[in-house]
Each structure stands twice: as C-alpha cells, then as structure tokens.
Amino acid sequence: MAAKRLKLLGYGIVAALVLIALIVWLQRPRPVAVVVKTVDRGGVQDTTANTRAGTVKACSRAGLSPATGGQIARLPVAVGEQVKRGQLLLELWNDDLRAQVALAGSEAKATAALARQACVLADVAAREAERSHTLRKKGLTTEEAADKAEGDASAQAAACEAARARTSVSRSQLDVARATLQRTRLTAPFAGTVAEINGEVGEFVTPSPVGIPTPPAVDLVDITCLYASAPIDEVDAPRIRVGMPATISLDAFPQRRFAGNVRRVAPYVLDREKQARTVDVEVAFANPEDTRGMLPGYSTDISVILEQRDDVVRVPTEAVLEGDKVMLFSSAGVLRERRIKTGLSNWAYTEVRGGLEAGDKVVVSVDRDGVVDGAHAELDPTAADDD
Image (cartoon, rainbow, N blue to C red; front, side):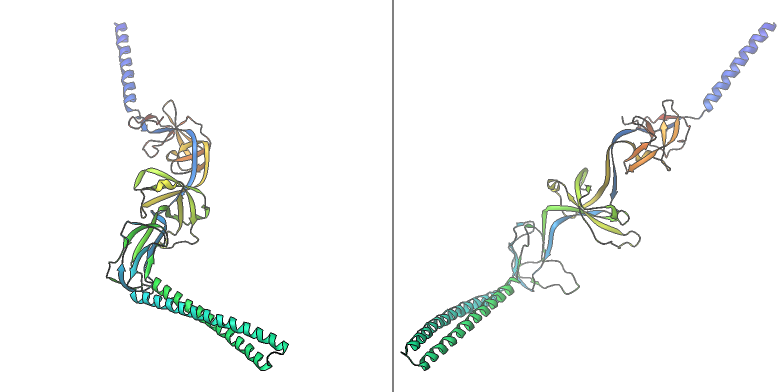
C-alpha cells in the first residue's frame, strides 16, 4: 500500500514539473523578428547633396529682343526650329533706314571718286613743280614761275588730303547707317533651337524700360549642351572643388544616375532663405550623349563625391546606432551590441575600420521594440538577408 502511494506521489511530482516547465515555456519572451544584412567589402563614398531641387540648364541660352522699338516686318523662323549662328530671327520695318544706307553708300562712292580726282591733280602738280625747279636751275624759267608751280603743288596736295578725309567721313557715316539698320535685325548669337517667340508680324515691340523686365521677343536655347545646377548648404560648400566627380539624378529618369564633374562653384552665398543659406553648384554631364532627350528646366538632384575608398569593410548605414554601435545577430539567435570604429559614411554605407569583419550579420531593423543587447531574435520571414 505504501509503495502504491509512493508511486502515485512520484507521478504527481513528475506531472507538476512538466506543468511548471510548460508554463515557463509558454511565458518565455518571444524572440523579436529582425531584419539583418551581411557585412561585406566594397566602395564607400563621402558625399554631399543639394538641399533643394536643382534644375537642368542649357550651357547657352538667351532671351533676345531688338535694340530698338518698331513694327515686326519679318519672322523667318518658327518655334522649335534649329537655327545657325548669325541666322536672321526677326526684322522690324526699316525701309527708311535701308534708304539711308543706300544714300550713305552713294555719298561714300562720290567722295571716293572726288578724292581720286584731287589726288591725281596733286600728282600732276607735284611733277610740274619738279620740272619747274629743274628748269630754274638751268636758267630756262623765272624764279616767279617756279615758286608758283611749287605753290600749286602744295595746294593740290592739301586738296588731296582733304578729299581723303572726306572719304573717311563718308565711310564712317555709312557704318553708322548700317549699324542703325542692324539694330532693327535680330540674329542668332549661337546655333540653337527657337524655344519661344513673343510677337507676330505686324505687331509692335518696344525695348524694356529700365528695371522692368519684359518677355524676350525670341528665346534661343542650345539643348546640345546641358548641365545640372543645384543649391548646396553653405556648411558643405567649402569642401567642394571644381573637377570633383559627382552623380546627377532626374525625376524624369528615375531609374538612371548620370556621372558628372563639378564645373563651377558660385563665388557667393544665396540668402533667399535666411536660415538656410546655400551656394549654387554646377555639375557637367561626363558623357554628353547622356543628355539626349533631356530638356532645360527638368528638376534634378546632385551628389558631389568628396572622397572615395574602394574595397573596404562596410556596413549598411541604417544599422549604425548612436555612438557607433551595431547589433550583431549571432548564430544562437541572440543579439549582441558591439562598438565599431567608423570611417567614411553616406546614406547607404559606412566604412568599418574596426569591430566587424566581412560576413558578420548586423541588424538593420534597429528601431523595432525589443532590439536590445542580449535579446533573443529570429529572422523576419518577410525580409530575409540579401545574400
């Protein structure tokens, strides 16, 4: 009987222990689901980017208007047309000025002819004076006749010089008439595309009043040469130098990033926003063919590469906690906090100079509840490692 009681007691103890173990197991902390990445080797760049959206701009763009007012007589080009340097874009009514150019040209020809006549007479008078001087030495003419010949020669020489001066004046008057006529003609200063025309044949155009900008008569742009311009925070601007490599991204081409080089850093700070002063930085496309299909005015972002290191141990920047710490995911499923020594860093990767090796697993979902040193963890099945 006693043996039976002892046996039942043993069963009871075993059952109690099993129950306690079950309760403990059910009440144990559940592992936190984490997303991990593998530490690898690769390149890391120290970069700086624009604070506000930039703009794609044309290397050559001009808003053109005639230098004088008048009525549009000719518009030989259309919007979207390709034009060559020096090609006529717009011409005002200028029949009166053309007549003045013709008149000035005729006067220039007349004065030139009179100058030739005067100079021929001067040459004849000079030879006559030379002959009189020779005859005077031989006693074959009077001194009075020789003096008169020399006087006539001097007078004819002065008339020739005066005629030549009048010819120079006539040519200058012709140049003035041509320049005045040219003010009514608008020509292309460079080869490009006509982006916009403000005006029609028969309409009047007037020059812009001082301090009051008005739309140009013709907007000419060269879309074969484009660059990106964007504002960089004044704190980062001193580190940027002309020639530094950069990358360009555009909303219009979301899947592409274009290589470029810094072509200009503005020599002044913009203070349009008093609390966010910036410096305009221009980046040229490294491959001009990349700009095919782009248009001036596209929004753009630039990232200037200040320094770059290749084939270094790197960790995703999102895994780095304050104080240069990371959470290691061990093979036992336990999180361990580790301090690391960092180097170059950008939004994607941070260089590791000590504390980690390639192949280590680090937690990138560091903002989840329960991600602390010593916590049990398991891989989030919805976001596995990217190996």
